[in-house]
Length: 483
Image (cartoon, rainbow, N blue to C red; front, side):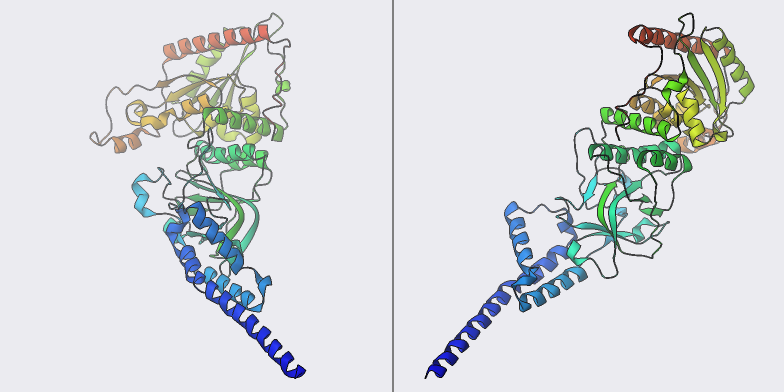
């Protein structure tokens, strides 16, 4: 009798346990298609579910992935993760629907994702984050000529796609409408990463992933790479040599607007930091400039004529050089030198510009080196004929940079277009391309008068600074080099 009672009790417990498992499965099975649908839907990438629905999702996802609840739960968890993995949807990195507004809104790069906006900062994407619902960024493809053949997806870290490679550390992902070879274009693409790092405890990337129109790039120009190395240390540019991928990033920051909405205050801080780190990288101290006034109390003014060869060089370089040398000689304390930008290494360029108060140069990438001058230094710029009439706002790039880096742009001279020589008079773009790479003439009277005015402005400014400063030497900016 006791044996029969014990057997019934045991059978009852076993049945109860079996029933609990069935009930659990009944609750979990409807959840699977919901999770799969959410993971597969591209609209979920940028949807904004209510706090209640998100809490519900996270709660049940946690239950589904809790293997400690028993063998059946563990088996179901594995099945669910497998379905999540198989349901990952990759979208084109370059969305041709936005080709006409490629740099506006969310841009055509990762077009389904909304940027994070913060006051004074460039807009950015960060993964994993609340915006990505805790998911990682994954990229597949390494095409260098067609960005639509490269793709991206957001993936739960527990359900990485089959054959995916997890790339540890922090990855900087950049997409630019321009390029990474030109000094100015490259700098405007990299500056937002410097600003983001400054705001986030000076974090350095483990690697860089570079795109142009969604097309993979395997290198940046030497000047730009040295500048990033000076700021972040070794620069590793990821080429995805392991094949098509996918490659998933433990942490990733994406910039796709160049400087975008970065405020002037942040730009000044970024350029101060880049200047300071470049000088430190090249072993250059501002104190090495020596006295700021001579023995008679007159300010020392360092005037540099920064030349270039080929397109947009001076037609008569020797005549222009003589004009500047003559005007400098008339000003006590003025020293004059000529530098050929193509012949200078990165650190040579940093050194020349560190010891420059006034730079005069034709329009071109070499003027980006104004970055390395002290704040309140001066810039004089020269253009070939046709630029004033046809170049549009792009011709003011170095004017903008001077303002953003704390310099004084003292104006520009445009070679006058007396008569149109362009064979396409009704087509402005074709005409601009006709004039774009022409050489720069000169006007001796105008150049001489303009140089006198600028040198006098700089002399007065330096006199005012000298009367306020208790020392006669430039002081290194320790705050600027905080990273």
